Image (cartoon, rainbow, N blue to C red; front, side, top):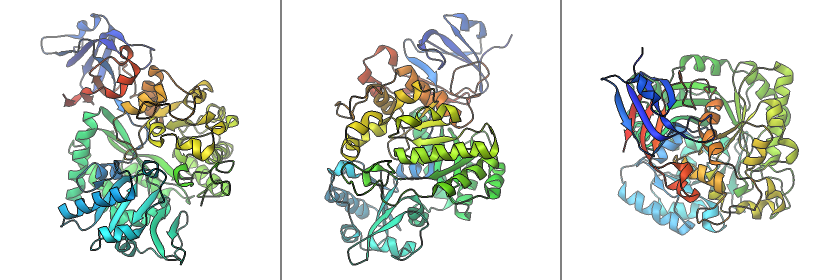
Length: 541
């Protein structure tokens, strides 16, 4: 008879494969789940050495698996090396925060910021380098928008990064004044990557410190798996950073499982990606596939739509798509052909269709390859494309809290009729799609519960209706499953993560209340009181 090292008991155990929790317990042996049983049956695994944790009516559930976030951008944003602009309500307010930070950090080589967002500035004109030059005249200043698709840089940052009005960017573009001078705005990741190389550059000792601090935060929020979705290119800069992460893993300093997705747009040869995948392949730090950006965000009119914007009928999206259909098809087919899953940022309905077409072409070229390809965000979709997710085996990777973050901006951008299928959680599930949830941190914070609340209630932060009344709500069980098993499927780890089942890895969390028994608005207020990753307790309130 095997005995457990730890037993967790509660009147509310949510396994992830049943619709509601039950009274029972979870037995842990080493880093695996030994058994999950109802009532007091779990006591059969108890010995004198077994530690028993009794949680009353608190909810025991699988650890949160964040299907989409940006490890390094997020870790820096979560550190004291960056000014937090998420609460700024105007350009003037942001500038004051930047000035205060710069005064308090006179020895920082660069001033970095994150979180300014047009929707929070009452649709005011976008900022320019003029105000940023005045606020930070002596050092490069890099301010990343919350959507990570727009940069606001001062003149010294533009010069340090080597930006010029006539440079070849591949994809994305630079903002200019009427006279052709750069105005400090940089659009889309390919163009932003040039500045990000300076913005996110730190020596190894600081990288370790920043990531260690981030791991503590993740554990506090019950996040036991996450990703690096920044689509890093095949440069020494990124390889060296991965080496630091690998060293931390080998020393046992990673307390959340990290899955990296490197760049695929513009490539048809993935020999380097394959080599890196073999080099970085541990249980807690691995390269899992490829990632690319096909469009941007509707907030700044860079999301690709099938029909023109309601408030700007002159465009279906500025500067998008970021690749032609032929280029996209070639890269996806080559990536899948090399045995690498592909994840595509496609926010607008036009980009979603292009991504589905590319995945369909990959199956035609490669056959039924069995890889887990995903489309990221899907904030709007055409009804004709809903069933294609199941047909093509493509996972819908989405972020519930982005619905609240936009605060009804889609109604302005798309018009009410087209908002019938904004954040179409219900329609995708009903069409048979696999749904995966995450945060896209640092776009929103890595606490998963506000996103689950938003998907269940379809509300803005202030409690008002988010978007239009479109019937796209889902149940609490569906939302929790999307944030555990669904997300684990994205990482091709649903056989070992995402549910409480015998033989799976012991990634388990306990919440301070049973979410199934409280009013819906309490979902986002819940706290994680215990996090266990790989059988080890990493956070205990």
